Amino acid sequence: MADIGVMGEGARSAPLSLRDKRTPLRTWAGLAPFLLFALLFMILPAGVLLIGSFQDPQGRFTFVNLAHLLRPNILHSYLLTIEVSLVTAVGGGIFGFLLAYAVTLGGMPPGIRGFIVTFSGVASNFAGVPLAFAFIATLGRVGLVTTLLKSLLGISLYDSGFNLYSFWGLSFTYLYFQLPLMVLIIAPALDGMRREWREASENLGARSVQYWRHIALPILLPSLLSSVVLLFGNAFGAYATAYALTGGFINLVPIQIGAQIRGDVLHDPNLGYALALGMVVVMTLTILGYTVLQRRASRFTRS
Amino acid sequence: MSMTMTARSFAAPGAAARRRKGWSSLWLVLGGLYFFLPLLATFLFSLHGKKGALSFIAYAHVFRDPEFLHTFSFSLEMAVVTIAAGLALMIPTAIWVNLRLPRARALIEVFALLPFVIPPIVLVFGLIRMYSRPPVMLVTSPVLLIAGYVVLSFPYIFRSVDAGLRAIDLRVLTEAAQSLGARWSTTLFRVVLPNIRVSILSAAFLTFSIVVGELTLAVMLAWPAFGPYMALVGRDLAYEPAALAVISFLLTWGSLAVIQLASRGGRGQGPTAGGVH
Image (tube, rainbow over all chains, first blue to last red):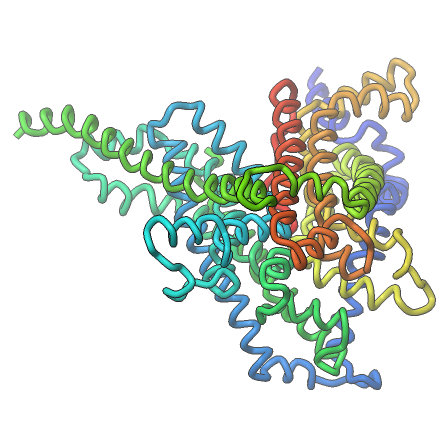
């Protein structure tokens, strides 16, 4: 009788445990198709770029390509990509948070919440070429809002310095998929905020500002930061939207790599590899940051 | 002292709640404007194809263009093959991890998340460099495009299927099936898969919405797909791109609405966030 717990445990962890222990390799073999596929079409191709970025055109080992990443125009494209990603991550983060707050804790009818969350699921997937078209039709030189503002209010967007095909225009367009992504990933964290915490602080005489400063923000901070980091990575790797919006005439790293693939514009394929390597390094740091922050955030949401 | 405390604790929550509601409404209105203005403007813009009158002529142009049908059906084909290949690869892997090798979960999760670390433009760069020279020349074969799409869909398919498997008692189900004498194929097709059909459906439609309009891989590997076609139309015409944007939005909306509807009825999860931008 005393063995029931042990038996139950054994049965749950492995129904055929004897065979498993004798041939663990055969068990691992079940993952072989997936691992082989990932190796062939993801790991090795990335490895080719990694090795190539440490080689000169004759195939000898060199650090020159990495040093070339510091060339002014390449450095500029990294800085611009980071800037766009940062602006849209922080902007999307703030407004996405406010929107998520409005539909979770803001006392709105539950129907609105369902609608906003569903719509965010769609909008975060509505990206690339069609998104660029939508913004061109809205805020392009002959876009509907541009012409309406001019004819109704006499405001000429493009004369006052706005340009959809430049930094701010691109950032404004990226927000269309950044903002809803923020709503989707921060809403669960906001759901975890207990009403009792707010009530307790109010009963103790705390004002709204104090509640946010001392209770809500410290609890939400890891979730907020990890979400913003994810948004950063989301914008950093974006190619299609920028390509369709600017026709490839904006100096982002993905656009540079694209030009490098289409024709050897840098006159040095190995420099192209180094560009790609730099992207993967930035993205890896981003995802690592996300993972670490998410782990800290889950301390509060788990309970 | 206690009087003011009591008065405060009665008065403050009401006022605070009203204030909260006010701010919330403001953010909702602003968010609504930002989201719907471009959609509305795009739709209205797409109706301006004929001078001086509103018409659906831009849509007629799009649908009458043989290239539209050609590229769209090509992308549709790629999506179907990608979904089939991705599911065939991921479902057994996810089952295996949940049932026999929980130790490997971390490893598989890392692999399934890697496509987020390797942007599509970098992935396609690596694929081209690796498969455009002997021993394996795949660069002109659709196999390479589909393989790339399967990689892009890893995170979505794995997360959907894994969430579905975790929501059911996989071990009890498979043991029950086996003790009743079912073979592995029977257990898989008649017990496990029907129980996670919502997750499978969600993975399939998510993959569909990613692949159909995908630009980066298709353009770099030079395939006549829907994404590059749209980009080309955008370079030459004014109103047809807006019509294409509306059509794409409806497609995305439609495929994700199916997931929503399906997941409302059963176990599993709703649409996962983030596409390929």
